[in-house]
Amino acid sequence: MLLGPSLAVSAVLFVIGAAGVLLRRNAIVIFMCVELMLNAVNLTFVAFAQQLGTNGQIFVFFVMAVAAAEAAVGLAIILAVYRHKETVDLQHINLLKG
Amino acid sequence: MSWIGAHLVEIVFWGFGGFAVVSATLCITRRSPLASALWLIQTLFCVAVLFTLLDAAFIGILQVLVYAGAIMVLFLFVIMLLNMGRGGPGDVRGLFGAAVAGVLGAALLFQLKGLGQAVPPEAIRLPPGTLAAAQQQQGVVNVVAVPLFDAFLIPFEITSLLLLAAVVGAVVLAKRKL
Image 1 (cartoon, each protein chain N blue to C red):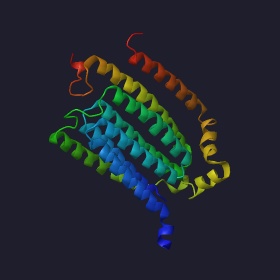
Image 2 (image 1 turned 120 degrees about the horizontal axis):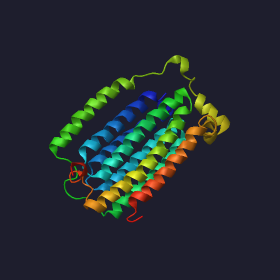
Image 3 (image 1 turned 45 degrees about the vertical axis):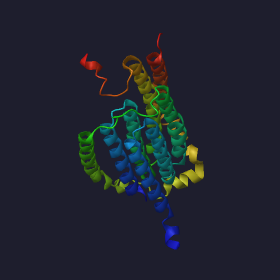
Image 4 (image 1 turned 30 degrees about the horizontal axis):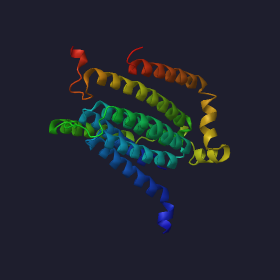
């Protein structure tokens, strides 16, 4: 049974993704780190699905659909911001401050 | 030799798991967004192998097709569209940011460590090999597809609505003039 190793790899991948969000300033790279975290959670779902039935695998399917939708909309937002500010560096994007 | 044969699945799992962790680390530390994206694709491929080893071959194929094939191509397209292939100076935060990320990451890993020992209760656990046997009997795709179009039909239809909304939203956001 590979449940323990899968949970370990999944936890490490999730932590790397979270650290990447804190470490980077480029909006697109931060977005990629979010995708990495989603993937780590998918690994947990699949690992538990091996013992608890296929419902976990179906949930991974839905997570992938949501991730695809999120990537399309998020990258469109980044494009719109880039057109407005000429940068995707989060240090220079503080629209809420006016 | 027999030891290797008995533990082949574990060896392959740890090999690709370790490779996934290494390439994820490279993904968040490379300065160029293009290199980051390529290392992320490498990570996604390794995770697809792990899915296959966990009796989820169909999910592994979907991972390669949807994640590495569609989503990451979209990322690469935007990176090249915005001409960020080289990566300006100072995208990675300084020493303070790295320290904050390291400390918070270690704290998160410590919290997740408790989760790692979680074992599902015996009453709801399937006997080992049930999933593999079902795949042998019904086929790799059927095991996922039949519940998806039966018990999960309404969530599936709602997913199509979500994708429609995302397509419309992406076009509205990215278009210069409507």
